[in-house]
View 1 (spheres, rainbow, N blue to C red):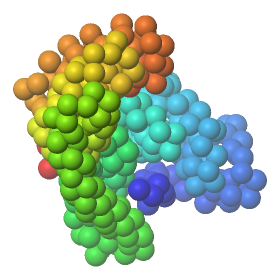
View 2: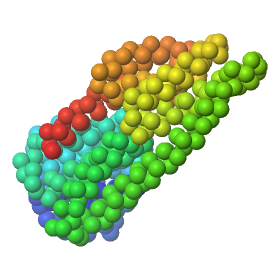
View 3: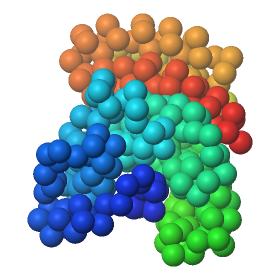
View 4: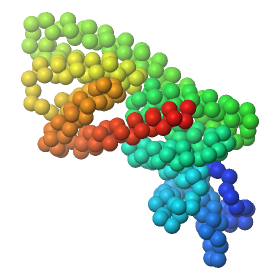
Length: 332
């Protein structure tokens, strides 16, 4: 999915920033704030943060945003529409960095701030909701939850169609982004169905080899069965078919056990895949958490840094995803 620019979601500021923006655009720096009222300074900082993002100076933008959202001095008087944009911008930056768990945390904060805005039918409110939904879709697409991504994009597209009808200049380009992203997911789903059919033929062939009586052929067939079932489980997970994903990961682990090998990286990765599928089934989340917790000693023993991070992310993302879904249901 393409990165979504946040210019369209930038809210109307309370003060005229014409002179400040001219300085920012000309020099790329923050104007002097000496002697200015706090609300004017805040608007200047908002405008500067937006400029940094548009100029792709994301490290500096992230620092500027963090200085505002974590400021004990600014927070009590900051308009909710401002803090919502700042958290949404932080989320978008984290998406570009592929920091999915942190991005979900920012999304949760953005939605919390959004829910406190009174003008829920205003254009600025709807623009921010669109930006949050699109970036959530980007996160879920990147983390293999294409079903959820497709739902978020569908809602994004519906909102944008209405908004573009009223303000084409502001929203038409963003609508095209959403349509392209939806097409990408649909195309990916078609390819996945084709790949699944191919994998099934491989499984059928290897199941026949298990009864060959040749130890070498049987072992090779077992290894191929594990790898193919593993891939099928991953595709099922991406397509949102959690129950079939659980079935394929479970079968893969069963055949892996028949190889009679010491527990290793493949066992660990398969088990994490199974836990990922279980995590997306409401009545199996406790089992998923228990499995992930039990896998951590093996991951540490193997020195599997990436898998340790993945386990942590799965455990940390669970509550955030649930909270986000609850808040979105409240909005819609």
